[in-house]
Length: 288
Image (cartoon, rainbow, N blue to C red; front, side, top):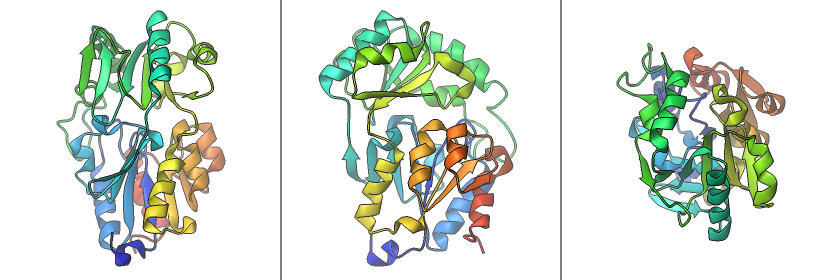
């Protein structure tokens, strides 16, 4: 980045699902708002719990100044990877063994690939298709040819043995036992938050590296660009957005978001169906 770019007045960090996009579909108003505020000299970053391998090209088509993925585990700007952290191999193997022993349907998430156990794909489609039913096409989206289930499952590579896999996060979609009950055996290096797909309920969740969250990724960008914290804006809706909204100079929550996000927000905005990101930009005076 040039010094002129680091002097831009605002750096905005956008969650994807439920904030910038409705289950992988970005409203045209959001795309246009991102492009317009960047033309006006602001920086805009994706800041998502998804790994890079689960961020489809159509989401990034609007153009962003950088991408934080894996809920802060990986940070990339201008093709340079500034951070890429994974579970330690022994911890990763323990997690896989534990999930397999309890017949949990899960995906291991790494920047370069998504991995699942052989045969889990059909189980995951049965779980996810009802969640996304009726949401694959609606007015105002960037693309009407997007299948949100395939956005998630299309990149998955399947294997009979995942114990040697390298990954930064795990999405659990269906657990016959409460995931909270499995956490004690995984040790202090491992954390659990509710799934961003709230319709899946308590049988789903996201397992992450303790101490890694979206604000960690934002701080990497902040230090690289010399940003001022008061000029950082974060917009999100899920449990994994709490830390970034707390950290930002202005934290904006989607109005029907997770209670923890609403509790720390400075402002509220509608979800993607209400063009909430565009309205939030306008409310901050970024589109004047």
